[in-house]
Length: 370
Image (cartoon, rainbow, N blue to C red; front, side, top):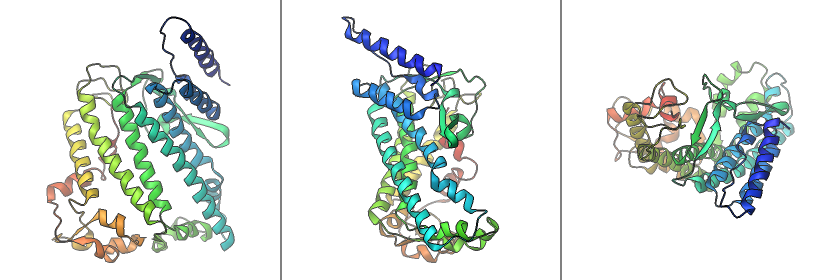
């Protein structure tokens, strides 16, 4: 166990003793646990802290971050992920082995979803106006295979010059982080709503992967096996867009400049060399507004088969609620989504350009704060 982790435990014990005294001293969650590679111990300690302080928003926020980070590591180090990776160079497995691998994937992803559901609840508990948690973001760890850990920033492709820099997570950050988890839950539940066994077969049986996989893209034809979960996926994606859209109002209402994660125009950024300008924030708001409208069925999405007139637009909401299968090739040439084309929906060229901004090079700028 690291010195920092032991120090955090000692500090926590001291603060608990102070709480028992006559002075109204507030305890603080053991934030240093997020720098530890001993994730199981860290989460146990954070749970104990929250159990003792159930109304402490900071404790909820730190535990939510720890649980979310643990899920990244759980996916990477799980037996099915390692097996799937190994199958790339080990063709010729049996159908029974494929089915067992599929069941492992389902079980592990279901466990990840359960933990992320808990994290969203904790993030929601943490969205109080006065919450403030100092973190050395350059030292946050995420568990990886073999009992090791890796800096969180390397996982998201970001870097800061000073790993000791302290970021003060607040209400806006908690809302943004919850939105990110809602996005992950939406994608995971979308996957588990289908029978995606055929796509595992590409990796499982082909010897020239990934070249063979290009010829087998037609295996991305997944029947829907759980319509209720597909609807739940839609709801997660709607909450993701709504939460991220709401962040701007929160950061603009702030009066401090504490090196926060999500920053307003005049606040000092942590991950970038210059503040996020009004133009970027305007783009974010427009993008998430369009996503809200798209998922609500108020506007449609253009498809290649309808180019250049786009007289019929794709009703994404109906697809989530009524789809029987996810067929990638059918989607690309239009046959699979013909039942969901709607001539009553509108989308002008400006809106098309704004939607594409989020995918073609601008996604990270729109999604990543600070």
